[in-house]
Image (cartoon, rainbow, N blue to C red; front, side):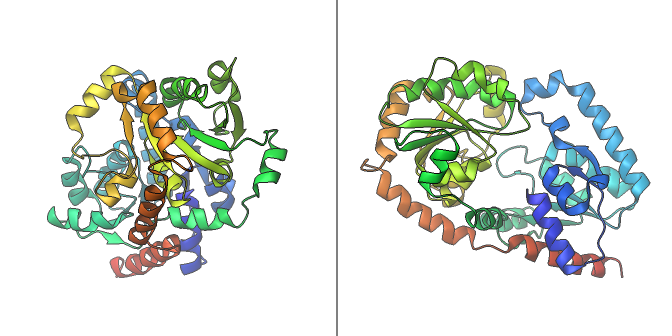
Length: 365
């Protein structure tokens, strides 16, 4: 999504721009399917255990990507997020004389601060998406560029086509009870560890209908075992549409926490993983919070129920508190307004695209 919007911004600044990319359908729609070297659904690995199990595949993909970049010989290699993979590509590009711009910086402020040295050594220009990141990277000797958060572009674009409540429930076979959205993640491992708990939670709120936001790159059968014998419904590739008609949301940690907040939906974060991954992550994590909402605000706005805190008494009490009429509902909505002011408005993708084209021209002189 962010890659596609950035490509649109680059084309506005330079209509002659041409692309070759690793990404997904949205990027293919902008840059041409014939230029999609690999679809990201083949490279979606998360967590120490999952990465270890697929290490041979990942190393093979890194080698293939290096070969592809070397053959294409671009004027600039733009890396988007995904630090474990992309910092290796940054080193390769630097060693081969290819300028490297990093968009959506590695979250070195959260963990693996050692990545700062790699960024300083191998990345020519760093573009960040959170306002607090510029000061953090400056303290570490890197002048990062902030032009806003691209989520605001995605939300602004999708808001134009959001459906009214009555139409949404009719088209998706839902009943007329108010909705609680379940955002259980976009990877099999996240769904495995988080969706069963969310389904269990739904049984405590029969006056609401709980709806899972599925993603098309995972078969519905991935969700089916956890939804069997429950009243939980399922929709696919309609996360924003679902949130727009929901009274509250239960969200795994990640970008979805910020998206939910920017859409104005009260939420709580529930996140559980396999024990080795959580123990290793806890050793390296350097932030007080895990949700982007709390990190940007630098205080607790949304409740984070992680691993053993993710139990039924905690979850039921928190969900009641954030639903309409609950003790935390109005305060959370007010906090979201402050969050929006800190993040800024739409247009970030166009601004970043224009800045990249401008800097590339300067760097090539």
